[in-house]
Image 1 (cartoon, rainbow, N blue to C red):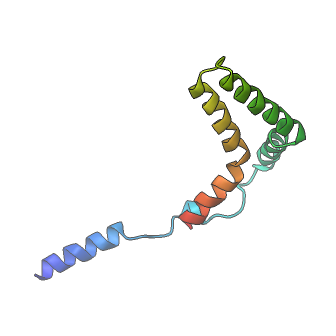
Image 2 (tube, rainbow, N blue to C red; image 1 turned 180 degrees about the horizontal axis):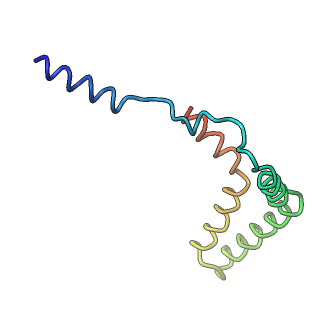
Length: 101
């Protein structure tokens, strides 16, 4: 009975929730400034006014082509879902981080 309790306690300690060290680091690593700046620029470009206008026109064109039968519905849905994921990426990541925390 005592060995069974020790085995269960050992398994609980092995599989129990613990803080991961890589997830607790809040600052950027040394030397990552240019990379972070480049990714910030890319994000600003992809989510800026020009990209928003292009995405609206693309969704309108794909929707019109789907309604007139010139485009496969699966491909059209893929384009529209891709635009929603692109513009909702920040909210998606925040939700995943909220669940993980």
